[in-house]
Length: 609
Image (cartoon, rainbow, N blue to C red; front, side, top):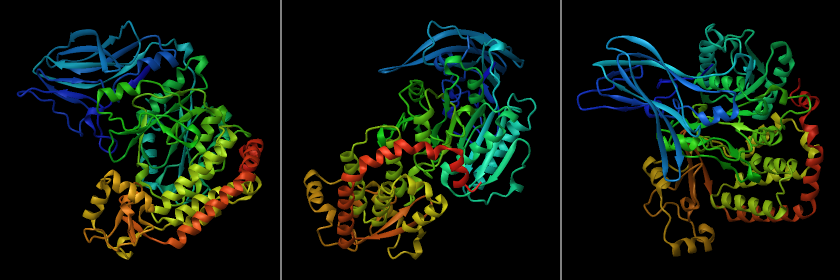
């Protein structure tokens, strides 16, 4: 069975060449690849290596999780080439390369197909290969890795792709079009009958004319109940037709991502070839940054009671070491729902996600249901980095949902740790003069204290509108009382911390809250700070600060207020006092009654179905 196709850079998806192949040229000879080609033209003595993120083969995982017995390489070439098969494995001081086989094939100006079996004493790490052009000209047209699997052992797989969207028409229509062209309308594809798409439109703004709806593509208008509500609506719709349509797996995917259809194909193949003891495994996709497409943000994660650990964050996937490190498996609790596939039987009338709107729904569902997570190089999405998606409303959900998730899963999040963490975040927002964010943090906690009955009675859409109204509104910079200057913004982003004594003094003065404020900084410039990565240093002794959001080119102004500071600190003390009497009881209550929130009857009422 074809395990994975060789990929080339493609405009509209990814153009980072070193994530696909590495070229080695001479002064006289070149590798003349351009993005408009679906092949690699080469001159004599040039070489290309495919020890890359998209074109290496995760042999260790193919043998561990699937019924693959051997792996071979198939190439479509024109000209004469020296083919070198390799296996690369991470070591403490870098990586090692084992050369497995070398063979010269082909003739000048002759096009042909060639196969090579990988034979190695070990299956650790990553299989890959290199090509050197031996004729005056050569062309690499493509190829694939193939696995030997008995036909009778291949599982029948059909995936339901569930997309939850809110006003992301450009992304959704583009992705659906590409998947339709690659699979649904392509009778030569193995996935032409193995994929259906279910779109839950939380904004109710997606025009059916922009997406050709048919028996494979379904669109549902839904209440704006966040990612949790949108994905659950899609799961409910899949449940209704699961048996009739023969759906074996559900793949949940964010609406604001760029995806290569090959990721879905590789996921499909993994699921088709799973060993019996891994038949319930989840298959996850890594998140790569949309602005720096070669940087990995996360490949699986641990919840760690809310102290989130993102695995392999910051890897440069242009580098061999980054790709090889990705082959190492680490303890994971969940895979985020930007891309995550799991057996459809996991979803049942009494095993639906929690209605917590956003931030933690994927965490909780993974903690509840995931036993094994399979991650492979080349299965990924490109997503806008979170620092480019600033929203005050998230502060309401951060702590509320952490408390709920930890309560349900007996993670022993002690009261003193909860108060310490809440105090730290509230005080951080106070020194940034972001008093509304501090209020939202405590609003979320106090709503947790209202108990599960209050939680179950809420209209998720109405509650979110109320939460949004309490936070900061992004405005055009020309409408703000602090003038915007890009050089000042750049300096704020790069500002270095002062020496130890000055840091101690600033901390003693509560970041300048106990000192007179200045209307401008020492350069007579306005005070400007980035929204997501702001530091207390950016606000030291400031009167007003323009909080600037680079992505939207908008911002909001926060202003120093001792009155609000003391009011919030008193409220924080009140929550700490109340928690002495209510925290443990509420943790037990959520644990005991959480199943009520997971049932279809509750969700039908919650979504007005």
